[in-house]
Image (tube, rainbow, N blue to C red; front, side, top):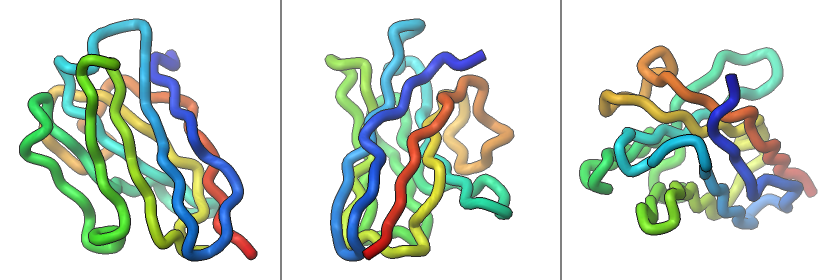
Length: 122
């Protein structure tokens, strides 16, 4: 059952930026740890970043550290993933998910969106 909605994906040239948003009208995101994940064709879903309910702590995987930034605005019931200096290898379907534990593992998340496509190509 889809409970989260991702937006902000699209086609961007290498070196470009996108800002993904994760929102829902079904429940209060402030009560959940939020994670961002991605899945490229033929590959397993991988964790990118997660943020706790109070914004600290937050975690970003090494392979995107320095390029991707996670944040949340609890007044807007939304979480964001700012992606800068995008590379073709970042092309994937990006998902956000809500869970109760501070984790980068997909299995620890209860509620998922349907994903937003990010394509990095010249």
